[in-house]
Amino acid sequence: MTRIKDGDQAYMTAFRGPYDQIPGELSATAAPLRKVTRLSEMAPVNLADLQGNPRDKGRVWPLIARYVNGAEEFDFGVYELAENEYHPLHYHPAGAEFYYVIEGSCLVTVDDEMVEASAGTAVYLPAGTPHAVRTRAGETMTMVYGFSSGDFRDVGTTWLE
Image 1 (cartoon, rainbow, N blue to C red):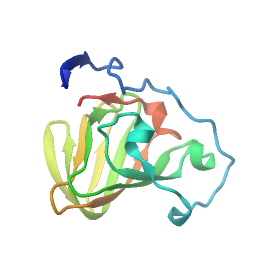
Image 2: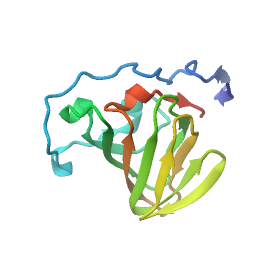
Image 3: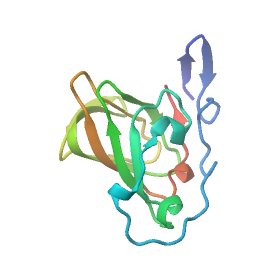
Image 4: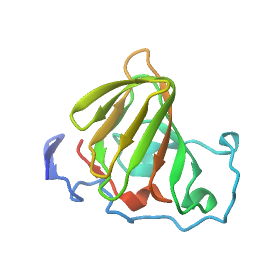
């Protein structure tokens, strides 16, 4: 477990933090099976609203997932960060995630390494890998993301920041 300072409050992670999700917690029911979805038809969702962590920035467009089109095998979509936004350090204990940057650039933390990621960079995050994404001044980023489950909530999230 990692001790984290949150303002004047300290808390322990491993599903003890105020925004952590135990694998399967709040998983959505399956949407009707739909084999084609289009980005242009989807509304963006603020990541803080979806993940429950108010410090989490950026917008996502879920495209293929149990709660979008009935897909059980994986959760896939597009993620965007504007200038100076941050997706705080966290890990998923029960599943893998990947990123593929399609436009712009950002810093991706993988374990304790900071990686400069620009268009064409792929990042594989096995279960339990601490990771974060940050844009800097003058920098924006759009990436494709995916989880190894039909609903990202099935893999759980433990926030380290």
